[in-house]
Image (cartoon, rainbow, N blue to C red; front, top):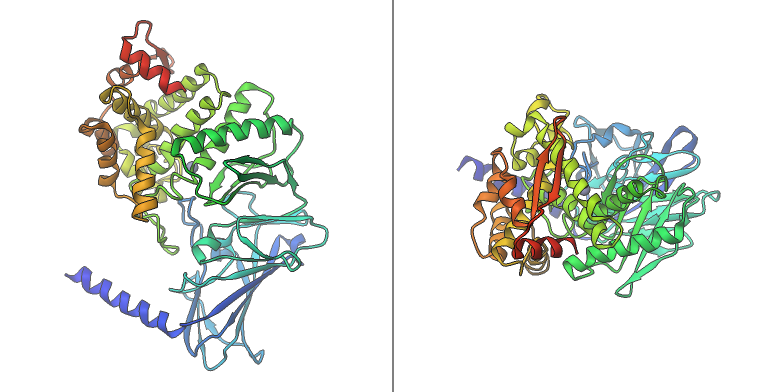
Length: 509
Ligand SMILES: [Zn+2]
């Protein structure tokens, strides 16, 4: 009962703040780069139709897709608030990511600040004289409790820079102004500005797919786009629906990592290594992973991942589905695209099994725990206070995905598989119920497709119980061996029965 009372007070407080500024506060941002040589950008936030009262503006503490508290507000400086008469308004900033002030009577409020952007990482903004990579969560303040406002963003593009890449909707090409239908959309739409190179578009189902980037490097771009289009098609074929009106891969230059969004992904990319088989497989798997996320996590999503808690983070047990199964599908997409060989596909799983089985955390942490505790353990489960007791859902996730797929195929005479589960949750939760699914609902969806209980496999999700590889891999005609130096290796069984052969062959294609 105590809990309910607290929730009630918060709701009432939220509504009163909300009502205070409604209806019709308009927010427009202007971003400029006069201090780019000092790795700074300048932001002006103009609010119109503001009502008198106490106002709090906040900067998110993290960005969806990168499940770590980033303290983006630490990069903010030169903070100023002015009213319509250009009079400075005093503010408090006792909570690092929140600025609170009182508006006496001005309908217009102008907040200006600088953002230092020095880290070349996909979840951090970066600015220098060659380009700007803007992470909206790390750049744009929002009015507390008013994430439904539809903001506009104007980019003062330096004339030396040729173009802007973003998933935001263009309002004016002459003033470089964009709009977002809500803050969730703004925060989901990074912006890259500089001398960017656009590779030839490819179309699937009449929908345009683009690859635009900074410092793309030298490689066979025609072949790259051909390969990428096959990989994207393999991903679309799993779900059978294209939910966006266009899709853009945004290459931000050399580095590591990628982050998924509804109609784009930002990826660290420099075109290196594509000429070797291993390098091509690695790059295509990486791009497949980020692309498949447009379904798995942006639309097929855990219940907790929306609406987001931009202050405290949105914790969920289900990153093993969102991330782990996206790893599972990145391999299958590149194999089904005809790029990855059967041998390389099995080796991809070998790497995950070897990493997982040789880590001490396997006895201590379940997949659900590694999902929930990633905020303290780090994205790969190694940086936390007790690193020997954590695992990575990037390793165990695809392994359990494989066991789950084989269990479903075995129980249905190969009439159904994990692809059917992904289609079912897409249709039932994204398209019909328009919400995320719970832990129990995901298991139920798997069991509905399998037509039987899958408790035995889900024990590998909820507990640290050792995996029965022989049984579940055997369903698909595979066996696992381990060498003296503890390297694990998947191999097709020499003698498969007819169901094992059918499952193995259809799994590969
Ligand atoms: Zn991912």
